[in-house]
Image (cartoon, rainbow, N blue to C red; front, side, top):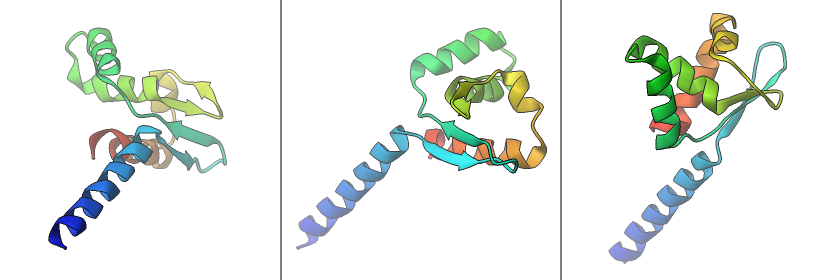
Length: 100
């Protein structure tokens, strides 16, 4: 019985991880749709090389690689120009998909 319970819990955790790999969708305050994708090591390396060691820029650049707004790719500057409420909403979704 215990093994079945543990196996079920493991399967549920794997299903959650799988759904997070597909990313998540949120809506900005102006109604635009945002998709946050699951990143890979390749994305991390791109961000590191772009930022040339400036770790303060790395997360924003990585977010730009993995975020689309209304189906369109965005630049880091596009994200930084958002209002703080929208920026933090995207940042929270990004963290949930990629760091939890």
